Image (cartoon, rainbow, N blue to C red; front, top):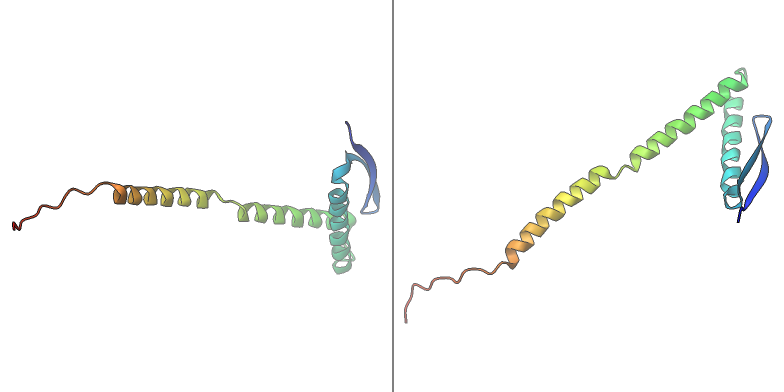
Length: 109
């Protein structure tokens, strides 16, 4: 079943018709609202800048946050370290579980 809907997003004084999955509507509208919010903030701080320049700064801000978040979520170094520690622990427990040779008894009764 094709559960697509058509919506119109309003951003930067323009209308953008989109066809999206119905379950994505909330997040798509939320993304457009974030763009408008940031654009309006830049407009208030830099009233003499063109809309193109302001939108460029909004795009830059989102790209920067995206890159920072992807670096923050990079778990590869931790996965490698955890694997190394797990291997060390496995070796340690293997040594503990090995049967110990019988101690020689030097004293005779």
